[in-house]
Image (cartoon, rainbow, N blue to C red; front, side, top):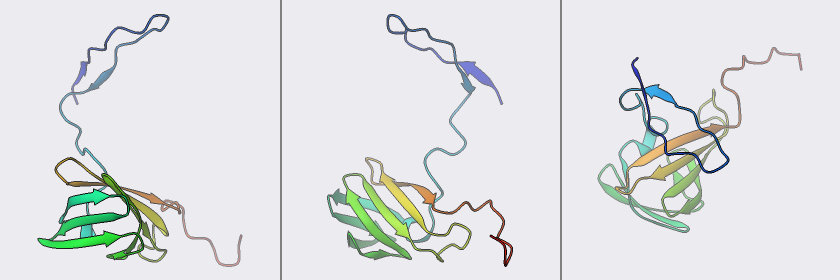
Length: 129
């Protein structure tokens, strides 16, 4: 992968700076996690505190805190963001998780999933703590 130097503005007085190399071109995957489930074909039409109007697979959908959205539960809605709670059991590898959905100015979603369980750990051995 090719690297190039990036111009950095001069440092503030009393601070130093260094040149930084980064891969040329856009990142391979910009944004959050790949979209799955009901988020796959979702676009935000309007978001305000406590309420969201979405376009899901071509149909209008209104959400409020406490509503179900697929297997997830809406925990909060604010301008540009919806936070969902994914219950334990929805994905056995991840366990209970929070899904943070940020919408860009065009209403397109980007997601981050924060798991309450480390999916890389092996299952515990029965009878051991």
